[in-house]
Image (cartoon, rainbow, N blue to C red; front, side, top):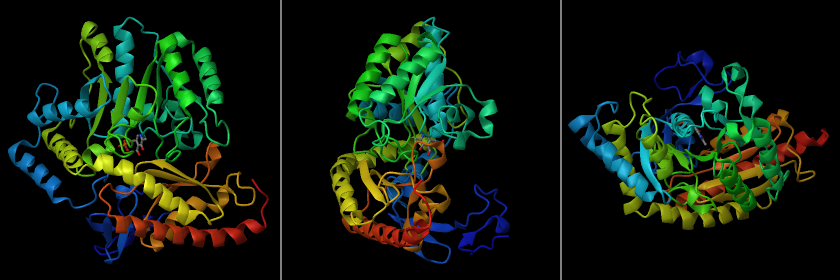
Length: 457
Ligand SMILES: Cc1ncc(COP(=O)(O)O)c(C=O)c1O
């Protein structure tokens, strides 16, 4: 079993039920700004904000810790079913003030999947309370991730993620992503949306559910403008709601308080989480526009289900401290400006790496897509596990990255997310880019020999 000072844990050396039984898990014991340190004292640059993009303000922030402590000393916990508290009230006020125009209410939860499920329930409540109880189905992009609960897994169209749990899931409909490879104009996705509406019967559709800018499933991808316009036209015609999963993109990640601000349509419901607690508390939120609220206010007047920790003083006080830091330090605007340069710096550093197809992104949500260097188009052969190799080599170079390889699902191949804390200095960003480029050059060399004997996929 794991000894206190092991720098790496494997399935043989832990009582923790591992996520992947063949993986070695580095043990990290402290963090400071954009650096984290393992049990052996080795330090790593955290280009992934804690691995999940939650730690937007870096590690070890004394001001947020002090705010959490002060709240815990006053009142750490009361349940929001019959009671409320000043921190929850103020955080709701702060969030609707920075949300896109027309968003007037917020409900707090404890994480991303819960926020998305609450959004699903809210959309359903809206329709039922307006007398349209046939509406329940959801249409969503296939290449997405909305959480690991049964309801949120049902929203993705990736068999690789859902198996063998589909037996527990509702049968929703999915459309392919409008990537450069399949549908650069967005027209094919609109046709697929029309087919899905037709197949479901438009009068049964509750919501179109999507990430405005994708995170791990398709890093930093967003459909073309034409798709968003066509989606808004179809909402107008058919009466479904648009729910945005801003679990990652909300609270500054893309250089805006919400990525919705940058698109030519306003959603009806937004779910957000990670950056709201910035890794210091488990908190998420669902926000809705006034017309969604009004439907329930005039209908059942009830939207009651919730979790024990929803709106707790401690997590809301952390949320307030996070919003305060973002405002005081101008970090949302900083991420917007600096993110463009960071993307250019990454693109310049990777321009000679033969399997890099594209560096894309908004703010500090950047994605690097890899292709087979022999035709600059095909997915890399999945058995080479290039994405995993990128993360391993980057880690050897002292850099934490996050890469994925959903190739078997058919919509995207190997890719890496690059999503540093908003507080990274110029020198730290430069060091991250250099280490990442070094790692990719090493992987490129390894790939060359591995690809020699194989046909293009
Ligand atoms: C886009 C997106 N939605 C939802 C979730 C689920 O959030 P959580 O893990 O907090 O339940 C994630 C988590 O990575 C995510 O990236």
